Length: 82
Image (cartoon, rainbow, N blue to C red; front, side, top):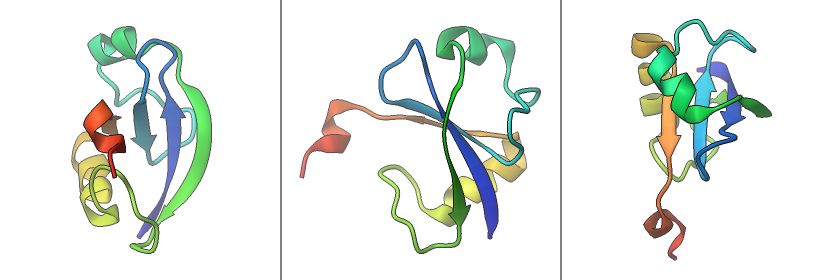
């Protein structure tokens, strides 16, 4: 269980970065940041398994953040179909 900070992209619709440390973009490769644009803070979330995510579980997101330093969520139109 961990807190993470979620940022939305200014260049890519439905694209979000999840990070362990607020405003610390050092783990993000420059190539990703150039495509992502300026990160805009959305919210702070506790990855405790209680919140549902469109892509990935709390555990999967946490593992990705711990291994890579971030989790990049890129939603497609299919992710919004019920």
